[in-house]
Image (cartoon, rainbow, N blue to C red; front, side, top):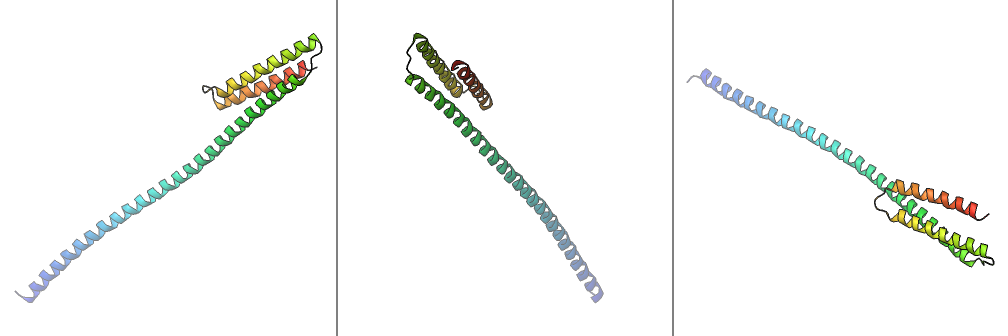
Length: 150
């Protein structure tokens, strides 16, 4: 074969090799771009999950705070009712009217304590409804004491 033909064949083989390499390089580049897109998507997903975790932690703190406040409200009201009953027990009732007032007050305080316990222990009502009922009991007790102790 002549040198020219040999040179042409060599050139064809080299060009074919370059085309194959170029095709492989293009495929590798496309795969890299796809991987970069997946990494960006995963990073965004991670950021979203981290934000969601922060929001959930804040909600948890709020719920725990609400629960603690409700518990304190219940405990405070319950202890005040108990204190009123103790004070009522210490009062001497000289007359029949005072004995009746004392008995009525004690009876009403027991009713309030029972209502408070029922509201607090009812699993069928929401915390918001419990708070509303406890607040209502507070107003009712206050009104009763204002009217009854005059």
